[in-house]
Length: 400
Ligand SMILES: [Zn+2]
Image 1: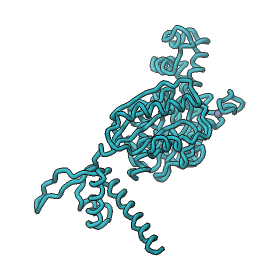
Image 2 (image 1 turned 135 degrees about the vertical axis):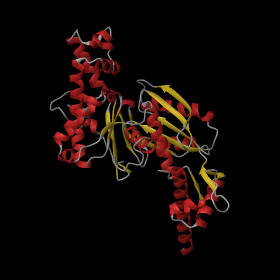
Image 3 (image 1 turned 30 degrees about the vertical axis):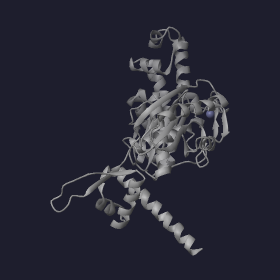
């Protein structure tokens, strides 16, 4: 019994050392064994044994050496970035996107499947279709599948509790895919995926406090506190906080939620009404009929300086600011990053939000919050894919 416990402890510390050394190699790019021992506080013998194991697994490789003044130059170790491939999916938009990536998050192959309006079993079949279409292009051992999905997700079990647009309720997606493909599967909410991507691959690398607010069809937040992503049930569902008493009916059944006044859908709806009431609006020069107005038309008219759109932008900023002021009151002032097409309103929108946050919260007044736009310039789907890949790398290899 004692021997079994000792063996388990040894296995555990070996796994810990393995992850620590691999993470250090990953973060530093290239290191000698001596440097790794110094940084990790492990003995030279343990580092050498761990590296030998990682080389056998193919995860790291030896590369050349740097010349030093004295003695034999040390051999350098680096990540073998193509040692494993991983599949990552973004299921949060009307086009499902999937990609094969390497361990550095570089995309090797990408596929899209249009699911616009399809729900339930049909949408689920599209997930399998997407993975099946990618698999033939996988040329390395697969680490697993990472997924960024919309809605309320039980992070530990990988069950999608509620994704209303896809009509998925209590769908054990992680378990189903893991069984079907015999692979590790990790699912995160799409907003959390954006935050992870920014945390690992973006300008806010390793910032231990961070909030990402994604405004699209819906509005949600990914929140990181003390370097930990908040995974609680329905965390970050800021889109369904009521900001207008007796306001419009929301998709959630309540009235006057933030989504009814600041989501893309709400913005487009209001712009169409504006176009009808104001024939002189540039919205009418950009489209033949108000029904043709999209979020892109709105952004274009705003850039042209249409005062109606300035008013609309100010209202969107006001309502976002009201909710963000509450977030700041609870969390302090982590960097807050906006993501989605509304970010194209640019600095004027950020200024309105900042004004509201500072006016409405003591925390905001005491410590001016940094409100910005996500730094990753990729398309939103590609950012979600990066985040989903990061979640897999964290869970399977302990890289972040
Ligand atoms: Zn709602």
